[in-house]
Length: 495
Image 1 (cartoon, rainbow, N blue to C red):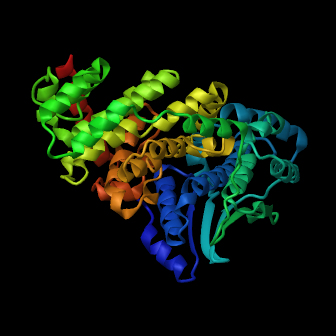
Image 2: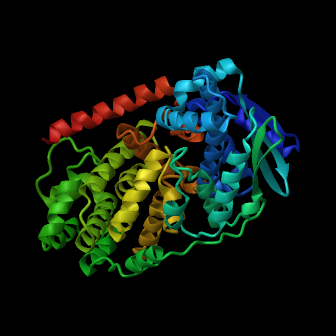
Image 3: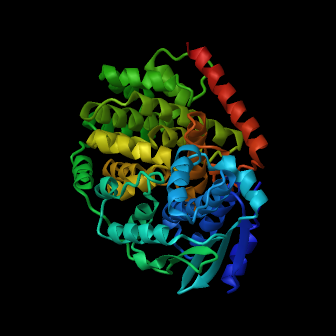
C-alpha cells in the first residue's frame, strides 16, 4: 500500500498550495509513492512522457541527499570529524568501502540521529517545482566538486563521452550530476532548472519541470545506425501477406489456408509449435495444420503469422537472442493468463501476441553495439534504476521500446500491438483505448523481471496494481506465485 495519498497531494498542488513530506531513508514504499505522485502530476500537466526521466533525476537527487546525511552519521559512528581535511580523507575512503551501495545498513542510525530528507512540491512557471532538502550543510570542497561536474556535464551530449573524464573514485562513481544534466538536455529542459546549494545549515536541490518542453533529441552514430537497420528490414514475405489476407476473408475455405501454410515447411513448424504453446491453452497436443486452425481460429492464426514472421526476419538478420525470446514467451504466457483471470475478453486474443513481441526492439539494439549495451546494463544495475530505457535514450538517443515501435510501424502492425510495444515500460502513457492491454503487458513483463531480480515489488506502478486490485506486497506475492505455478505445470505437460 502507498504511504502517501498521492491523489490528494496532486489536487493540493493543482490548487496552488505546496505539499511536503519527510523521510529518513527512501525505502521501497516511499519510492513507490513518489513514482505514483510524479506519474499523476505529469499526467495532469500533459507531460507523462517525462515520467522515466523525472523519476530517474529525482531518485539521483534523493540518493545524494540521503548519502549526505548518511555520511555525517557514519563519520560520527567511527569517531572522525568530517570538517578536518585529514580525517575527512580517511573517513570518506571508509565510507566508500563500507557504506556506498549499502546505505540501508545505516537507515536505523539515521533515524536515531533525526537527520531527515524533506521533499516539497509546488506549482511554478506553468509546471511544478520539486525541492529536496537534507539536514546537513554541504562542505565547500563538496560543493566545488559538484559545480565542476555540472559545468563539465553541460559540454557533453553523450553519457559515454563523459564517463572516463568525470568518474570520481573517491566517493563512488560520481556520475549522478552528469546523468541529471544529460537527462535534462535530452528532454528539452534547460539545465539551469536544476540547482543545488546550501545555507550553512541545510542543503537543498530543486528541479523545475516546465509546463512545456521542446525535446532536444541527442543523435548519435549508434542511433543513426539503428534507424538505418530498421529502415533496411524486409517486409513480410509475400506468402505471409497473402495468408493474412485469407484470414480476413470469411469466404475462404479453411482447407485452402492449411494447404498454403503447408507449402512452407518452416511456417508449418512455427504454426504447430505456437498452436501448442502456453498462449492458446489447448487441451491436447495438435499434430496437423487443419486441426490447429480449427482449434485456435483464424484471428489467432494471424497472430501466429505475425510472431513467426517477425522472429524469422530478426533471427536471420541479427544474432539469435534465445534469452530474449525465452523472456518474451514467459511474458506472453503471463499476459494471456492475466487477461483471462480478469475476464478481459476484449484483449484476450491480443495479450499473448503483445507479450511475445514487446521486446523485439531489444534484439536490434543489442545487435548494433555489444560494448555499449553491456555498459548500459552495468550502469542500470549499479544505480538500481527501474528500467534501462532512460540510459538507452541518454547513451544512444533511442530506447528499445522506441526501436520496437519503429519496427512495428515498418511492418504495419495493428495499433493495439504498437502501443503495447511502445509503452510496456511506461503504461500510464498509453491511450485509454489500449490501456488494459498495455497494463497487462507491463505487469507480465515486470513479473518476469522480478523473477530475474531486475526489479522488486516497489518498482511496480501503483495505478497498475490498483487496476488489478493487488493490495500490497503479500497480495502480489500470492498472485505472482499462482502464475508461476501455472507456468510450471504447463511446462511439465509440454515435456
